Image (cartoon, rainbow, N blue to C red):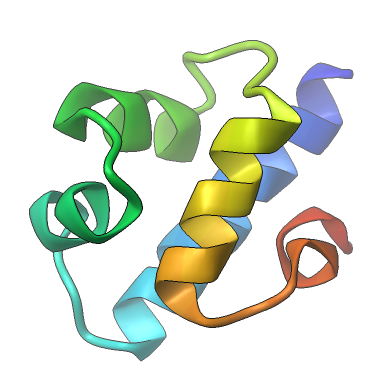
Length: 70
């Protein structure tokens, strides 16, 4: 499970950088705390909820599939 979580974090960072937005801006766009974004990206959050992942995907204008795929 940790491998999938880490991949989600890697993908969030990839799409965030592609859109050239900071973790702070993503946290505001997704209505999540800054530290939540940071912890998911680094893999420190073991199991982000689907609700959290959905908020991030919506803020990045991508599908959840993009965040969980290898």
